Each structure stands twice: as C-alpha cells, then as structure tokens.
Image 1 (cartoon, rainbow, N blue to C red):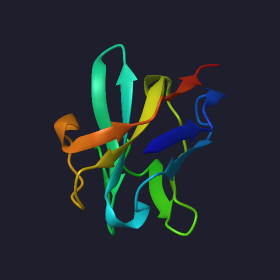
Image 2: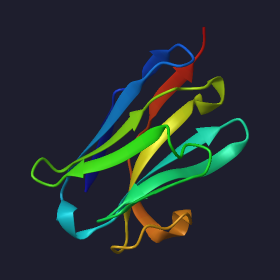
Image 3: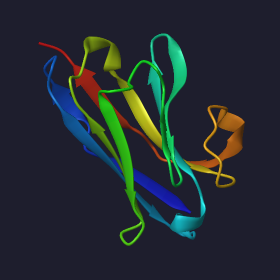
Image 4: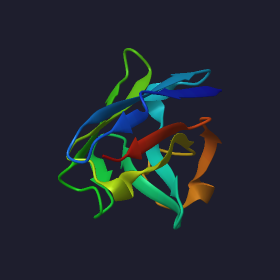
Length: 119
C-alpha cells in the first residue's frame, strides 16, 4: 500500500490550495479515506469520505473532500484558507468503509504535505 500526497505549499490568507493523495496497492473504492493534519496544537482529523463526506467544524464550509475511484485519488480542496490551517496534511486509509476521527481506525498513512498560510 502506498499513499502519496501532493499539492501543498504557501498560500495567502483567503487563498486556495488543492491537495491530492494518490493511492496504490489496495482496492481504493472499498475503503473510507480521510485527511488529518498536524499543527502546533496537535494531530487532528480534518475530513473523510466513503460515499458521504464529513468535516471537522473548523473546516466546514471552506474545505471540500472528494475522491476519484477511477484514478485511485483522494482530494482536498481548501478555500478561504486561514493562518490556523497551517499544518502538515496527511491522507490515511481507513480499515473499513467507516469515516472515523480516531487514528487507530486507519492502517496506512502518506508521508504528508506541508501547507503554510501566511501573508
């Protein structure tokens, strides 16, 4: 199993970035996937998807998660970025079809991609 994130970088407050996570080595369409992030405050779940999308309150209305099962790729469209969104972002494969905030429910992780929001 391999998960490779891309798309991070520097954005200004109010700007946008789109993260991608290319998956391989498993049946992508049969598992839930999530995005997590590591900030100075800790490690937190951001968003997840199997059929339906779920979001942390801190990103609801600004971030959109999606998946393209034909391309084995997970996405996170991040709009109206805030300095507090600065973090290392990770995609993770769930053990089942259930989206969960608990990291123990995920068995594979990408290496992460850095997002920095600053003027």
